[in-house]
Amino acid sequence: MLRGFFVILLFQLIGEVIQKFFALVIPGPVIGLIFLLFTLIYLRRVKMKKILNVKKDVMSTATAITSYLSLLFVPIGVGVVMHISYLEKNLYQVLGVVVIGTMLTVGITAKLMEYLNLYLRRKKK
Image (cartoon, rainbow, N blue to C red; front, side, top):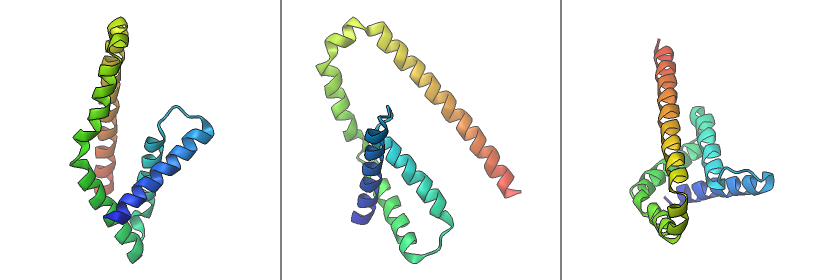
């Protein structure tokens, strides 16, 4: 599990470096985890024992971390309470952004799932 945790943190660090170097607005850990996803997809066909062990470690670590996902919302809640006066002044703008962001997320996720289902059906044939 420690090796999997190290790999996840390594990719987050790579994402942070890329984000700072190119001054991107996307958070570094998101960039790093996208790179991790593409790396795991690329290495899916590799049958080397060491790489298979690393992939298993990353998967088991990700599963274990997911069970503690609710703890990551505590800092967000504290941030909301700290900036409650800002939220009161800009309530409609914040609500608009939340509603639009939610609608975009649901729409993009639905389209992606539709595409992936179609891709998997074609691949089975």
